[in-house]
Image 1: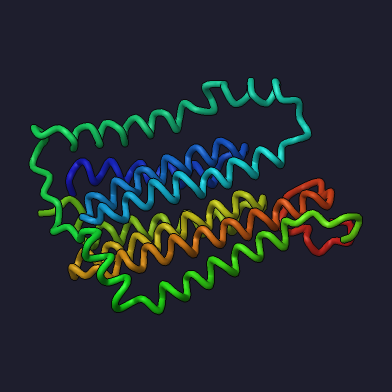
Image 2: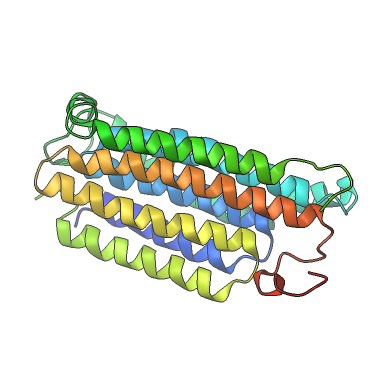
Length: 166
Length: 103
């Protein structure tokens, strides 16, 4: 195994273990973001750069924002300044910061043209994925659109504020 | 040899899936259970991408996109349920107290 692969896999597993052992939900979200970034490095090393981009943009960018939003709404009981002081403590961001630095160093190392012989497998480009997605698997895309619509309606229905009822 | 062999990826995905499963089984806070579910879904998606690389087929990444949509729906609905329960005045997010009358 290449050292880059070993580092990325190690950061992924470490982040995942830290996610399930944290007490504070925001710390766990930070570790989960780092886990997803490291996993996207793993996907790049597997030659699936399109999947890696989707992982960063949709997972680490959109779904994690949902988590942060809900956690912020759930913690309304405490006074703001006390919570912010707790979140800015190095205990909260030092671990995810170190793991993210490792991932970022790997990225910079791979981006320089003088980097070592990292032989990637034959990449599957977004062209191949798009052709396959909208020709052979177009029915599954439609089914996923139904699933997304159902999820949208469900989330709206559950989250709707009903006046005075249960 | 490439950076990741197929076996290495399978081992990594198995470890990640085990960690996520342990999280679902051990943690009782519903937010943490959702995060563990996301880790498990990521492990499954990693296996699909690795298989797509191994046999050089784009179907693996097609499945990855579908799993991504599934994860988005699952997270949105789960978080909506959590918000709903919290708005009802539940004092805790413990998943085991859902059947209590005041829960």
